[in-house]
Image (cartoon, rainbow, N blue to C red; front, side):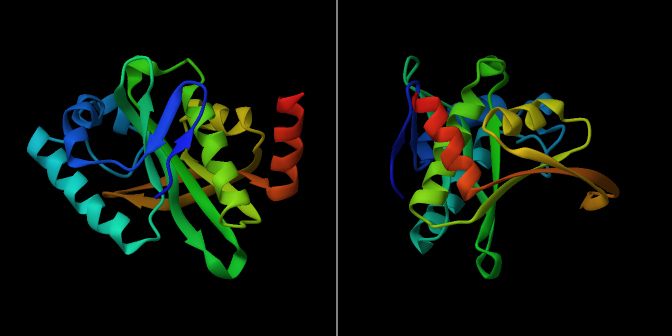
Length: 185
């Protein structure tokens, strides 16, 4: 699992020692409102989840980074690939952020770096983000990194007992490279 760097963030493997920082945001209903998982009930649950992730990292094909905000030396969220489609040379990305850090462009900064890894290292052709209808924050993050909104898939995701309509935004490798070149100028 490589370490990635941005101006404000260190993206690295998550460890069990990150449990306190992760629990701080993962226990909040506003964080999980548009996610497929419920708020973490206690720190022990978060620690068990982080232990589980160690096995996933050790398998060698799990790319979900903890976001360390350099100024605070604190894990404030995650960003990474949630699924791969080898036959289509594509992947889906997801991100979660502590609400104390919302509105600062941090999720977009992390996502852009992860997309670069996907295109440059993994050789992907397409990366997409999916979000539940109503989660305009997530849609804006995807658009900030150059993804194009492609539309909604009605009742495409079963969460608990409810079907959720899901939006899809995506970027292709050549589009990403144009966006990255423009940012460097």
